[in-house]
Length: 144
Image (spheres, rainbow, N blue to C red):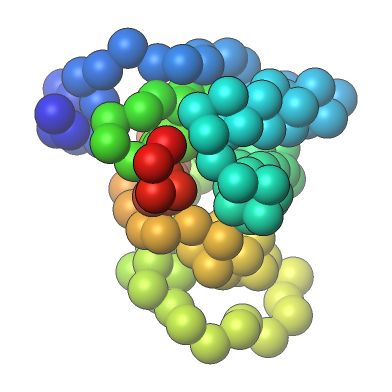
């Protein structure tokens, strides 16, 4: 079940397959762990590559825009989910959630969220002055 924690952030009530800190310099190792989780659950190489790309973009956003560090959680609940939390200043999320057109290059960013959305089957963002939570999900391949 997915709900909100006391601080109004998205909070899954499931045991994570992975729950680790996102810190600068650790992204390559985390990408390998994310890929292993997807492949171990039977995801095809192409879908796993898309998933890793999406998660990597979110981790990079934590380092670049979200205060430099955060938390990564991945769990399986029918679909494969990833949640990234940071403690950055937050931003207005609505323009990024269901955007289908590619954003113009900008110093403010937005491309990473667009890529993550394109490479996953759904995205939710909850952002405010105490930080941001981004959750993506991808459907598992048939028979996985």
